[in-house]
Image (cartoon, rainbow over all chains, first blue to last red; front, side):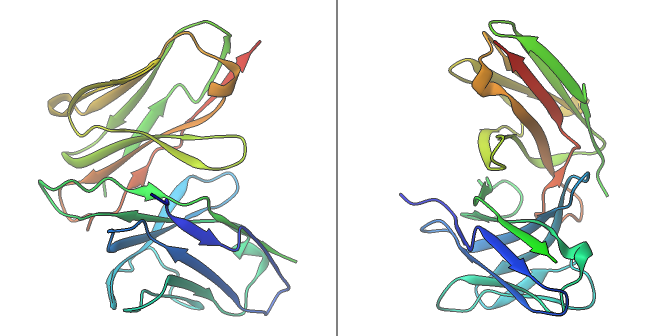
Length: 117
Length: 111
């Protein structure tokens, strides 16, 4: 049973370019979360999506960042016009369900390490 | 939002020693998970434990939800246990299912 898959594992971009990070959840999971781990900081929530819906994007920077989880295919985290401060590890997680009194353990992918030159 | 504090921030052990890591949280939780981030940066699920006690090999965890803390026990530590241990919680109120992470405990096990 494959785990959460992310690609690419490493991504190098120059300032001003676009970065696209992909995440395929575990089989049977329809809830996807994106987290960012900045150097010297902890892991921070960015966005929570279900198929074709953004449920909570309270952790996303207001500009340049967007996320989607289409009906078919992986979830995509898109960063436009990257800056050096975007350099970080981006983790995707998935869960089988969410909400109170449900089993909602989150499983994490290996992460994408973004370096902005 | 909910606050998560982990202690100690750093821990150095000799191989074979036992240790206890603590996680305090500021409000009621739906979900509490322990993770190990290995030296390659991967986050490994250790326990899903919003309450009660679980054991998995040399590791065990206990969450006392009414007192808002969780403990992770590592017995007979090995060098491969090195890395950062994170506690993460999903608060009951208004967190919309997101996990809030503590700053972690950096564990170094020396041979």
